[in-house]
Length: 229
Image (cartoon, rainbow, N blue to C red; front, side, top):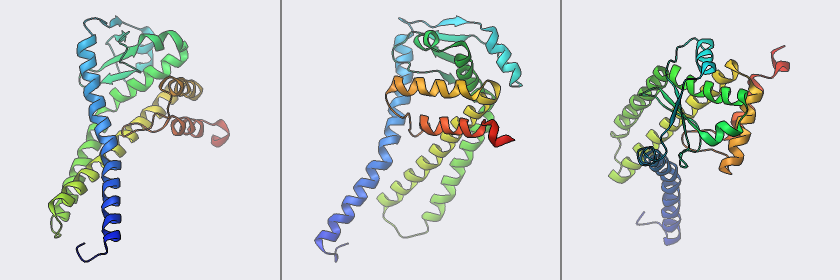
């Protein structure tokens, strides 16, 4: 670096900073978003206590998906809960009240099936995350044999684990979409994604989720009758 021209050095520094920023923005958004979700639940659940609803259609969906689910659905008017989500540790499904009032019955069933799929495939998801950790350990073990500076080593390690985790989490969402589509219908799934696309005013793409556009295309491709004749 010292013997390079000043312009070349500045260019390399700019590229390095750009790559670092691209790497950390989604990671920071993921961490702060998850932390914010937990804090918002703890803060608002006292004021916006979720209603526990034992829904027969959810139990029927679970049975159709070869699983059991005997817990209620927690419907909340917490303004910081933008969409359905599942706590994999408690196996609780939370659903925004506003969404339950707007989505049709069959569209709600797709959303429930998607969350049930996360619960059903939790062991598979945990296994894939464990493999991502093992792959990261193997990567840094090999990388440590090369003479590189400490900062580059740390950035390479963080970049690898971020990419591995992102791949597993986005794969997990795609798998839940497919399972939910088979249990309900692709048309309802597409309608649900179109609704949330308008609600969040964006494509929904991030470290943990594919874009709404790609998710709709996947449902169209997987469940198009013309492609299965």
